[in-house]
Each structure stands twice: as structure tokens, then as C-alpha cells.
Image 1 (cartoon, rainbow, N blue to C red):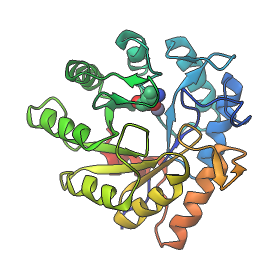
Image 2 (cartoon, protein in one colour):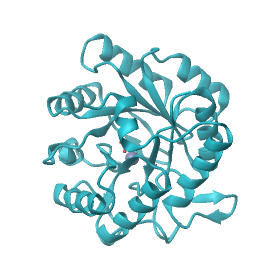
Image 3 (cartoon, rainbow, N blue to C red):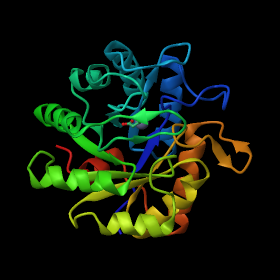
Image 4 (tube, helix red, strand yellow):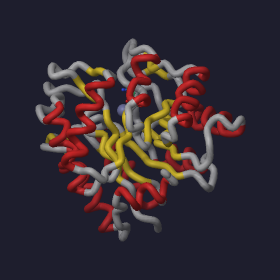
Length: 274
Ligand code: KMH
Ligand code: ZN
């Protein structure tokens, strides 16, 4: 089986230090968390950034500072800024990291609108998806297609048929968000069977489903995402002390199952990043 690409979602936009004091906010903390994930085996950093007080921002200069800090510590790592940002942000706000110089190698492309718990709605209309995709391809940025539900996979496939989303596609199947698809083996098999043969995919399980879903992905030939954005616990009731702790656990599981871990350059080849 091909090597496992591990993505670390080190920070997110919603989780706070009240929930786990190790959530990074400052540039320095973000650098430390990225380094811990990279040293443990992550080849991609999925990046949100925060103000020093923890509030989420898509500010381009904040992204630049954080990326420079991470590059200083782990120059080879692949950056994947979020264009999802936080719920309620405008499209213009969310797109800012796409216009960084140099352009990031990847970015997220959220493939549909959905409930996000309580009164929250994460809005991604079809036209938004098309605009974000166009902006990414203009800059040779590989989109990771964030699918929180089956209809989002279908949206990506429809836009692929129209030539808007290009082959080979790379999906992130995000399972267990309130309002999205459940994190079950049945549903993962259903999603994976819906993908074209030449697509690659990563699996993200939210909360306590993180490690079970990632383990299934390792077995099925997919790739794995972990990190504070998705889950703050190393095991039941035990807060993770770093993103590196979460990545180390995936590496351990993967090695037990006989699958080696991809370096960033190996990940670039597997994802067709040029
Ligand atoms: N913060 C979520 C509302 C992404 O990074 O593209 C959306 C999100 C997806 O995190
Ligand atoms: Zn994100």
C-alpha cells in the first residue's frame, strides 16, 4: 500500500484554550505546534490562524507571519491554509491566504453548505465553490476538497465533470460534525466507493471518532488527518499535550498495521503537487 500522508490540523478556528490550554494562538505557539506535528510525522499542516487573544482571523499578514515561523522550523512541510476560516466570515475574508506570495501549495475548498451545530451555518454556495476553485487553479494551488456530507462529494464530482475542479482530485472526508455525515465505517465505505479511482482521500473524524476513523483510513488505503482542530484528547479523558502527541499515535497505529509514513516530498508526489 502507498505510504500514509498525515495532515495535522494544528489550531482550527473554534477550539479554545479553555478546552485545552495547549491550543496555539500566538505566532510562536503556532510554530511550536507545527514543529511538534512535523517532527512526529506530519507532512501537511492544515492552517488556521488566530489573533493573540484567540479570535480566529484570515488576515493575510498573520498567515504570512505564521508561515514564516513554521518554515523556519520545518522548511519542507506542505502548507494548506484554510479558506473555510470561521463561520460568519465573508468570502473575501476567507480567500485572503490564497493571495499570499509565494502561493501555498494547497488550500482547502469546502464543497457545500451545512448546519454546524446550534444556530451555526457554514455557507458555501455553488458559486462560492466555483470562485474559490478558479482562484486556486489560477495560482497552481491544489485544492483539498472538504466534504462533510455525501452531497458535497457529489457537488465536487459535478464540478469536475464541468472541468471546474481538475483531476486528480484530493478529498478530505470529514466525518462526525453535527449536521454532517456520521463517523461510522458504513458511511466511510459509502463515501470512498463514491470517489473516482484516480482520486486520493484523507479521512478526518471529529472528537472521539478521530482515531477510529483514521485507523479505517489506514486500512482502506486513504490518508489521515488529526489535530486540535478536530479533537483535543489523546485518549478518553486525557487531553493531548501537543499536536505531536496526536500525530505520534497515528504513526504508531500505521506502523502496527504495516504502513509507512510519507515524507513531505513523497506526499507531493502522491498528491500530484507540482
Ligand atoms: N472552521 C470551519 C467552519 C476549512 O478549514 O476549510 C470550517 C473549516 C473548513 O475549518
Ligand atoms: Zn479547517
